[in-house]
Every structure is written in structure tokens, then in C-alpha cells.
Length: 583
Ligand SMILES: Cc1cc2nc3c(=O)[nH]c(=O)nc-3n(C[C@H](O)[C@H](O)[C@H](O)COP(=O)(O)OP(=O)(O)OC[C@H]3O[C@@H](n4cnc5c(N)ncnc54)[C@H](O)[C@@H]3O)c2cc1C
Ligand SMILES: *[C@@H]1O[C@H](CO)[C@@H](O)[C@H](O)[C@H]1NC(C)=O
Ligand SMILES: *[C@@H]1O[C@H](CO)[C@@H](O)[C@H](O)[C@H]1NC(C)=O
Ligand SMILES: *[C@@H]1O[C@H](CO)[C@@H](O)[C@H](O)[C@H]1NC(C)=O
Ligand SMILES: *[C@@H]1O[C@H](CO)[C@@H](O)[C@H](O)[C@H]1NC(C)=O
Ligand SMILES: *[C@@H]1O[C@H](CO)[C@@H](O)[C@H](O)[C@H]1NC(C)=O
Ligand SMILES: *[C@@H]1O[C@H](CO)[C@@H](O)[C@H](O)[C@H]1NC(C)=O
Image 1 (cartoon, helix red, strand yellow):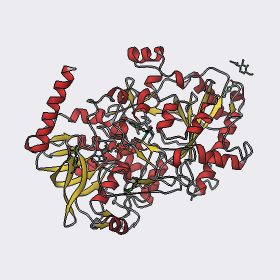
Image 2 (cartoon, helix red, strand yellow; image 1 turned 90 degrees about the vertical axis):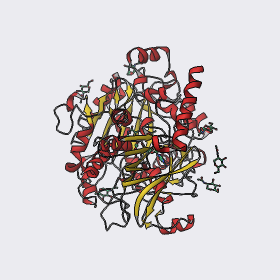
Image 3 (spheres, rainbow, N blue to C red; image 1 turned 30 degrees about the vertical axis):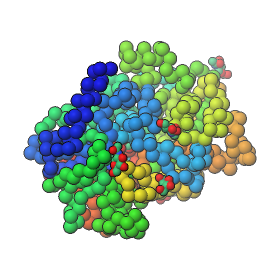
Image 4 (cartoon, rainbow, N blue to C red; image 1 turned 135 degrees about the horizontal axis):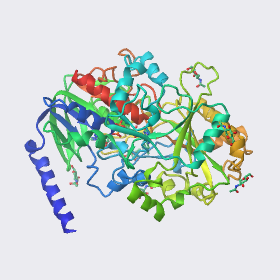
């Protein structure tokens, strides 16, 4: 008690020094100011400060990841879900949806985002999946010149330390970079599932190789049974450098712009506002919700929206438009062999297994083990798969506390999610990899503390529902394979909802998709990268905000088009940005 108290006193004193007269801890001017210490910001700060001649300031709204009661939940992979709605979460919500989230209260889902050193990587599922080579070639073709697969591959490679034996000889990987990539221990049902999908004609492949249709084992950023964020893998080593200052609990409220040139930033610390200057550049790495928010507050966005907010317009750009996110739907499959039960997650054995060996369910990502990639596009011209199926070796959705934090409807939790609670089963999650629906992000007020209005417009394009339905048909065919039948695989027979429709009819599945689909938590493209004359883009192919000098955006918001799980590509973007900036 005493020690903690002393420590906090000390901390307060240190912070007060920062807050009142900065000089010792914060200079008045830096070469580069980076906003946000998440996936991208942590990489960028570490890479830029490798050059001892440049002075770098990294500002983060959240706290240090090591100083919080949440720390064990950040490090232990199996406990990540407990971080939702905690003090390291921004606690955002979607705007009520018209075509999706029918199973959520008021059709609004919680949108967790990390507010801590490590950013959203501190609470995500740690899946490392780069995305199809074909999607990066699309980026290049559609105006993000120089971001084709052959251009980005070296930066993916630079970041990784792969422990996946099958990839050890691949020229797309290496085993001496900072980000460890590994596969999890397989459960016995994984073989059954591989067999089932292979018998349907899907090849066994390696995730993160060139071939991207087939079935592969999931790779994750787990090292020694613990979560490895970019803060750990990159920033930890850089922390001691004289030329890098990291300030936490600093909420950046705007970029200071003089004559169309970014000259510094303003941030709020302990309720006091500070300004710091940047002699070279300001770089926003505040994420797909944070970066557009700061741009709006700085006078960069659509003229109309800024006018409504009474913010003077500095650059009229489509900030916050083009919001893309994945959407997925869980199919529960009951079987007659024993599987893990999520409600017994934290039994003594699992805890012991984790603490003594860093193994077991607590060292894993909730039982998710494999990805199947399929292309349902009949035109056969599509250069990448449109569906991803996640195999999870447990019935994944019975944690009622988690369902409530997600904002699921109480009645539904009681009926649907309680059914089959004690039964054995697996979950096949159908995810739309390239949704056609587009949403947007706007501000509700000019208060930097307020949540933005986030409207992903999930399933607003009817093609998206159709493609998910194609996915459900594939799941049905998997269930019908002889090997799945040999373990009595069967889909939910007595679902209480959508009962106005005949079970297994087209309308039933449309209702099911709109009711049970969940947000992908992969928002991208709110500060879309594109050709200079592309009016729908915010940054150019060097990630520079158009019409404003010395200002870049480096995070998941610049994706021209959604890929796969975005974290790997976000790391790649930060690696590439560092190289561009230091050149
Ligand atoms: C529940 C969940 C599970 C996920 N699982 C996976 C997965 O398994 N694999 C995968 O690839 N992706 C996953 N993702 C997505 C992935 O984590 C994100 O795409 C990625 O972390 C985005 O990185 P970023 O650098 O753009 O933003 P972030 O990592 O969110 O970093 C932004 C940082 O900026 C800070 N910030 C924001 N505004 C301000 C401000 N005004 N002032 C100061 N600081 C500010 C934030 O606090 C944060 O630290 C998941 C996401 C969620 C929510
Ligand atoms: C699947 O398993 C069956 C028997 O269990 C076996 O005969 C078959 O060869 C397997 N198929 C594949 C593709 O592994
Ligand atoms: C922060 O400042 C606002 C006004 O600027 C004030 O209303 C509020 O009480 C302050 N909060 C704290 C914690 O000091
Ligand atoms: C199929 O692929 C083509 C070519 O990429 C694309 O134009 C079309 O929109 C896709 N169709 C669907 C239903 O996704
Ligand atoms: C988040 O936590 C607060 C209490 O800290 C609680 O009031 C709120 O209902 C929770 N939100 C959700 C969606 O569970
Ligand atoms: C927007 O602001 C209004 C008025 O202050 C408030 O009632 C509303 O809840 C806010 N909306 C969001 C999404 O925060
Ligand atoms: C599951 O069903 C199969 C086929 O009916 C049967 O051979 C097997 O014994 C059953 N297994 C269990 C654990 O009940």
C-alpha cells in the first residue's frame, strides 16, 4: 500500500513537472511529432529515433501499458476480452445501424479501441494476416502508386521474426525482425476440419504466403505465451534513447497550422493545454477513428461538415468518408466429441498451465485455429478471395458478460446465446473480406474529449448480405462432409429468433445475417490514400495530407481499400513511412 502510494506521489510530481514547466521533459520544439503510440505510432517512433540526429516526440492519450491494473490482461492472450469497457478502451459505439446489428441494443455495437501505449494492438486478437497480394496490387492500380505487392513485400519482411517452420525458407519472411509470428498448438478437431475442407477441394496452404485460396493455420503475434505488441517489440528498445520523448495521458486536440503548413500540435494534459512545435513534420498515427477526428478539429475535412461545426476550413478533403470495416457471422456447429467449453475458461488447470508453462487456452486466442479462404465471385475475375472462414474449436459465444459488454440485446442473450451452453461444438465464422458497404465518421462537437459519430453502415449494400449467404452455404457443405458427419456435426436446429421465416430458407438466412453479424473491428480508409487528382482521397502516395505541408497520416486510416486483418499491413505502412520520411 505504502509503496504504491509513494510511487503515485512520485509519479504525480514527475508529471507535474512535465505539465507546468516542460523544459526538462518536453522541449518546445522537435523535428518530428508523432500522435498516438498504437500499432503504427510505436513502429514509427522507434524507427525515426534510430537516427540520433533527429528529435522525436511521441504523444499518447492513454497511459503506459506497464503501470496499470490492466497490465496482466494485456499480456495474457486469453484474457484480452476483459479489456473491453476498461480504462484502456476508448469505449466508442457505432451509430444505430439500419441494416445490421439487429441483435444489439438499439442496433448499436461497442467498438473497442486501445487507449494505452500499444494502442488497439494492446487489446486485439493478435492475428497476423497480411492480406492477399492481389489487394495491394489493386491499391497500386487504383492510385496509390508504389504500393503494389512487390513494393510492400520488403516492408512486411523487414518487420517479422517468423517462427513458422514452413515459412523459414520463404523470401517473404525472415526470422530476425522485431515482430515474432508463430502458430498456436493445434487441437484434435483441427485435423478433422482440414480433412473436411480438403475433401471439398480446398488446398492446404500456409497463411501469409503468395497462394491465398485454401485452408491454413492461423499465425499470431504471441511470443513465449504472451502478447507481443509493437510497443513491446519496437518501442521498448527505443525508450532509453536521448532523442525520443514519450509523453502519456496527452490528448492531442489539434494540429497547429500556419499558412497551410503544419508547425506543431496542441495537447491537453492534466486539463491544461500545451503547444509544441515541429520543425520537420507532424505525423498522425491516432488510428482510423482518432486521426480523422484530429484532422477535423484542425480544420481539415469537408467544407460543409466543418462549417456546421464552425471550424474554419484549412483544406477541403473527404476526411472520415470511405469508412470500411469487415462484418462477420458466427455459425455454431454442435458435435458429439468433447470440445472446450468457454464457460470453463478459467479453471484451475488452465491457470496453472499458463502460469507454469505459458501454455493452454490462456496462451491462445480463444480457440481460433484456422482460416479458409474462398472466392464466391462468379465472374472469376476477382483477384482475391471474398470470404474468410475462421475455425474455432469451441462454441465461441456463450460468455454472457462479454456479450453484454458488446452491447448485445438482453433477450437474445437469454434465449439464443443460452441455448446449448453445455454442449460440445465448434464455431465457423464467415467474414466478408471486401464489403461493398461504405460508412463515415463525423464529429458531434468540437470537444476533443467527445466520441465521434461512427456510422459504418454495415450491410447497407445488399451485395454484402448475398456474399455472406454464399458463405453460409459453404459452411453447410462443410458440415455435410462425411468426416464432419462422423462426429454428428449439426447446425443450430431450434433458434428462437427470425421465427417468422422457415428455418434454412433464404429469408431466414437474411434475417440471421442481419441479426447475428458482428462488427469486424477493422476500421480503415477514413483518411484514404490515393492519386493526387482522386477527390475521394485524403493523403497522397507518400502519406502526405493533400493541400497541407509537413503533415502526414501513418496508420490504418490510410488503407485505400480494406485488406484482411489490418494489423500486419499497418505495421508494414509504418515501416515504409519511416523509410519515406528519413530518406
Ligand atoms: C477487438 C479487436 C480485435 C482485433 N483483432 C485483430 C487481429 O487479430 N488482427 C489484426 O490484424 N487486427 C485486429 N484488430 C485491429 C487492429 O488492432 C487495428 O487495426 C490496429 O491496431 C490499428 O492500428 P493503428 O496504429 O491504426 O491504431 P491504434 O493501434 O488504435 O493506435 C492509435 C493510438 O492513438 C492514440 N490516440 C488516438 N487519439 C489520440 C489523441 N487525440 N491524442 C493522443 N493519442 C491519441 C490511441 O490511444 C492509440 O494508442 C482488432 C481490433 C479490435 C478492436
Ligand atoms: C480424410 O479422412 C479420411 C478417413 O478418415 C481419409 O480416407 C481421407 O483420405 C482424408 N482426406 C483428406 C483430404 O485428408
Ligand atoms: C477541467 O477544466 C474545465 C474547464 O476548463 C473544468 O470545468 C473542469 O472542472 C476541470 N477538470 C479538472 C479535473 O480539473
Ligand atoms: C466480382 O469481381 C469483380 C472483379 O473484381 C467485381 O467487379 C465485382 O463487383 C465482384 N462481384 C461481387 C458480387 O463481389
Ligand atoms: C461499461 O462500464 C460501465 C461502468 O464502468 C457500465 O455502466 C456500462 O454499462 C458498461 N458498458 C457496457 C456496454 O457494458
Ligand atoms: C451529440 O451531441 C448531442 C447534444 O450534445 C447529444 O445529445 C448526443 O448524445 C451526442 N451524440 C453522440 C453520438 O455522442
Ligand atoms: C459420434 O457419432 C459417431 C457416429 O454416429 C459414433 O461412431 C461415435 O461413437 C459418436 N461419438 C460419441 C463420443 O458419442
